Amino acid sequence: MEPATAPEQETGRTGLVLDPDTELVGDIGALVTSDQRQMVLNIVADLHPADIAQLLTHLSKREAKQLFSWLTSEVAGSVLAELDDDFRAELLEEVPHDRIARVLDELETDDAADILADLPDHVADKVLPELEDAHQVGTLLSYREDTAGGIMGLEYVAVRPEWNVARATEEVRSNAEAVENVYVVFVVDEGHHLVGFVSLKRLLLARANVLISSIMKPDVVSAHTDTDQEDVARIMERYDLVSLPVVDAENRLVGRVTIDDVVDVIREEAEEDIQRMSGVAGGEEPTDSAFRITRGRLPWLLLGVTGAGLAAAVIIHFQSALAAATVLAAFIPIVAATAGNAGIQSSAVAVQGLASGEIWATDFGRRMWKEVAVALMNGAFVSLLLGLAVVGLGILAPDQFPDSLRLAFTVSISLIIVVVLATTIGASVPILLDKMGIDPAIATGPFITTSNDILGMIVFFLLAEVIYL
Image (cartoon, rainbow, N blue to C red):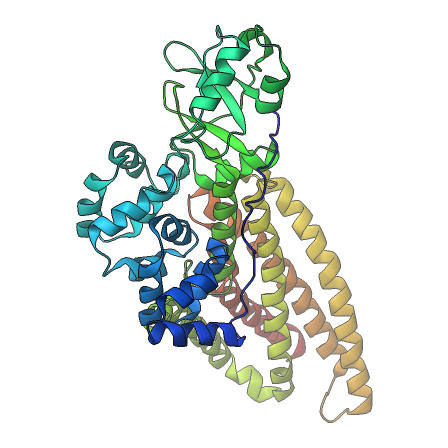
C-alpha cells in the first residue's frame, strides 16, 4: 500500500509552546481566579489546542476546570484529545452530562470513544445516549482499548471497483465534512469486503471515465479489529503508511487507523516501557496524585528491598570466608555492579528489539550464541584489567592485598563467569516473557538487576572458597 501525503499543518494557530516557568501561566491563572473570562479567552484564542492542554496541566485544578468551562465545545473537544487520561477524567468529573456530549460531538468517533472510555461507568452510561454518533461510538467501545478496533476511526471513504473516477471523486467530496483527512480511498465489493485501495493522488490525476478497478491496487495491507496496537504501529512503520484499513473476521472494512493515532500509541508504549524498565508501574503521568505515584512505585521498591535482603543473606552465609580474608569485601560492589550492568545492557537491547519487531521469539538460539560471544569478549577484557589492578595493588600494598596473584585470578574468573551469566539471563528473560505473553520491559527493571546481584555474590564467594582461601 503506497504511502499517502501527510496532511497540511493546521493554520490560524500560533503553535506557541508554553513554558511553565514564564509569567504567562501565572498571569492566566490570576485572571481566571479573578473571573476575567473575556480577557483569558482573548489570550488563548490563537493558541493551538495542544498548547491550551499544556496550559491546563500547569494551572491549579480549580483554575483548569474554570478555564475549560469557558471554552467553546469545538475547542474543548480538541483540547480533551490532547490531555492524558487521568487528568482528563478529573477535568470532566463535575461537568454536566449534556456539556460533555456536546464536546464529544465535535470529535471524530475514535477520539470520542477514547475519552468516554476513561470516564466513570455511571457518567459514560449517561453521556453515550446523548451523542449524535452514539451507535458508532458504542461500537468502538465494544473493542479492547489496546487493539486496532479500539484505536480506529469509523470515518473513511470507500468506493466500488465498477465506479468510474468521476463518481469516486464525488464520493470523496460528499464525505469531506465527516472524514477530516482523506489519505487514501478504499475499494470494497458488494459485501463491503476490502479488495483494494486508490491513493488520493492517483484518483485526482486519473481521467473521469476511467474505472476504479483499473487504477486500484489490490495488494492492500490491513489489520484485524483485534490486532494489538503495537502490531498496528509496527505495520504502519514498516510499510510507511499514514492510513491503515481495519477489517473484521470476514475481511469487511469497518474502519481505519490514521498516523496521528499511531503516534500516540508509539509514545504511550515507549513511555510505559521506559517506566517499567526503571522500576515504575507503566502509566505514570506528571499530573498523577502523590498517592497514585506511590502506589505505582512502592511494589518495585519492595521487590528491590527483598532482592537486596537475599543478597545480604548470601553474604552472611559466606561470612566465614569474609572473616578469613576481609579483602574480599572490597570486591563485592565491583562484582555486583558489573553483573547488574551486563544484565541491563543485554535485556535493554532485547526489549527494544522485541518492541520494534527486529527480534523474534524464534531468534532465541541465535540470539543467545551472539550474547554469549559478546559476554566472553567483554568479560575477558574487564577481568584482565581488574586482575592487573589487583596485582599492582598487591605489589604496592602487600599487607592489604596478600597473595595478590591468587586474589587476581579469583576475581578475574568470577567476573568472566558473572558477566556471561548476567548477559545470558538479561537477553533470554525478555524473550521468554514475550513468548509467555508478558510485557518483556519488566525484565530490565529491579528483577534483572537484583537477580544478577545475588547470582554474582554466589559465584564470587564460591570461587573465593575454592581458589583463594
